[in-house]
Image (cartoon, rainbow, N blue to C red; front, side):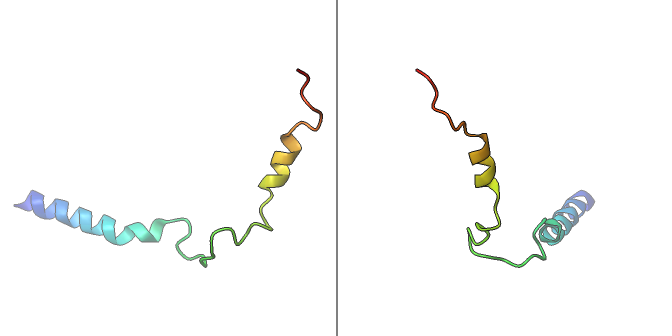
Length: 56
């Protein structure tokens, strides 16, 4: 009986503390793609793409 109680307490603690350990817990929420102007991935991709055509 003690083992069942101990396991139940561990599960309850993990379930209660889980959301508080997320990286974005206290950050404000924004719609998907709202930071597209601040995102520099497209610049990195365009920098890596060759500008000359590949000869065939």
